[in-house]
Each structure stands twice: as structure tokens, then as C-alpha cells.
Amino acid sequence: MARMLLVEDDGDSRRLMGRFLRRSGHAVDEAATGADALAALAHESYDLVLVDVRLPDIDGFEVVRRKRDMTGAAETPVVMVTVEDEDILPADVSVAGWVAKPFTSRELRGAAEQALVHG
Image (tube, rainbow, N blue to C red; front, side):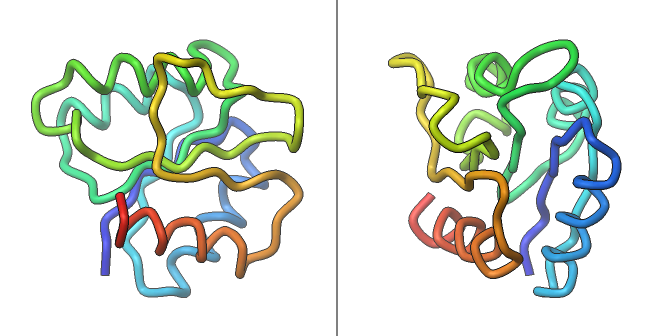
């Protein structure tokens, strides 16, 4: 079982994704904004972060950039959640995986498991 932080601004999507991951036995904390994600990362330890690229305040790429400078969170692998073909990974952002919307529960769990193993 891994402890994950799921960052998604759409409440319905966040609840559904959380349910998919919890059914696989993972503990999942949820955040609706980039600022909430950074606050969680500053106070808690996670095995994996899943973050939507498009957030209402700080985009997912910036969350990854800022996470690099955080003691304890810098090495935590990240899976980006994105709209297929619309988001291009900036050169200064490194992630362990991607999952494109729309996705199946199998695709989400697979991306998370692969990132946990190969992070």
C-alpha cells in the first residue's frame, strides 16, 4: 500500500480517481488546488503525487517545480494527469508518468503502479 496525494480541481473527477486508487489498497489524500498540494507536501510524506496539469491557481508543472525544493518531497515521483495532446512537458519538469483524460480505472492504476516501481 502506498500513500498518495491526488491533486485535481474538479470534485467529481477527484472523488472518482480517489475511489479507483483506494480500491487498489492505497491511502489517498486529496487536494483541489496547487497551493493545497504544496501545503500537504510541506507537512506530510507521500510515496506518489498525481497532479492535474490544469489547476485554478498554480498549474501542475509549477507544483512539480516547487516540490523539487521541498525537503522530504523532492524525490517523490509524480504522475501528471492531462488532457491528451494539449499539454507538453516543459524541459525543466521531470515526471515518472502521464495519464491522459479520459482514462479508465486500469490506466490510472497502471500509471500509478509503474511510477511507484520505477519512480
